Length: 553
Ligand code: F6P
Image (cartoon, rainbow, N blue to C red; front, side):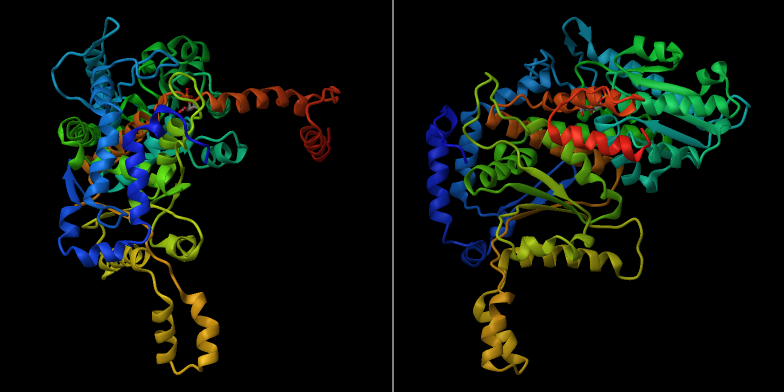
């Protein structure tokens, strides 16, 4: 870890936390549980229909107070207000980040830079509603008069991950028979496999791109349009089959999309926060507009909780500060997202972009290099599958791996005793991570199986599990539209709070630009019939040569 001499690490609040960490080094969580029968009740909070058990953390009341002192010393309450009222919190791009306005059904008018944000949001929701109604009622049809059966959403990053997550999470709420396909990657396989499944007469294409300049999306959209025309469509038919969601209406029009088929986006919505805008159209087309509004209402309920709940009882704040605790004071390099629900299986992917594009930063808001770590690696996957894959490393590896277990209390699909089984697995894992197994316990276990002393001594060390791995358990009654909205909004605010502590711009992502640019420079060298003789580094040059020779160039 870099040496610390910035204001943050020298602050008394930071120093107090370092002292708390030292005093907790020899007090494992299981001792904290043994000392306090009320622990599970005291470290349990609710908000917006979600419940958080955070008792399985390396936490005491003193640590919790110290973490909140740190949050207050970073003026978290002011910074939260700044986000919600539309201040330009994205300082490098001079923009607000008003994803909360997208899900605010209130009548309070929010004007930012002379733009009536509330009115724009309401008008867009109304036009989404009309469009969804027209498609679902079949008053809008394909160019041969047939009803739409498939929607292909073409977009990447934030224009893909959130909608995909929610479409799959809310599968039990689908109201239309529309099949929803997502094409993100510039990998011919993805678009080819999708086109092979659909009928041009009954397919709606949504080109989803805030900038309308993302190469993956534009190239896939060109392929889709060409295929559509080759399979019976024409320019006029393109107008009834291709929609766009973008902040760059002119580029969409230039691409050939009828201006009346363009839904707006705005600079004040970040790509990874755009699910709540018309980028959510594939979701709305699948689950219907009423359920889409329920999703927004769940997110709004979390916004209200984030805004009003005291910091100590505030779900995003508590989860954010626990993340800071492990990243900055205990050396955790990753954070695992472990949803125990098939419908939430894409949550880790979405949170990876949300968190790692937001907190993957190396300078503070003034552009000075950070002297402390910023965001950890976010990873994870659905339970119980992960138990048979990467949980081994959490149980017996050498690293600290804080984890969020996420599970509904009820299932949409009661099958035999499956849900109880799943729940038992989830609780079993978090308990095993906490209590572990001592050498004495391992030896006693082996002895009871009648093993010789020599074998016991040889095997027992391999069976020791250190435990003391922290975890949160986040619960909802069921995976409903409201719960999914609240869950995603919770992680958005968690990310923002951490950005406040680390003094980051959580809403830009300059790092991804260099790779894009270099890729664009390399492309002509792969395509030209004759090697141009240009050079980069020897590794790039060798690999270009390999590609050219494998492809007969
Ligand atoms: O990966 C960079 C990025 O700009 C993301 O932040 C964004 O979500 C994605 O590309 C797609 O951008 P667009 O919606 O403009 O096509």
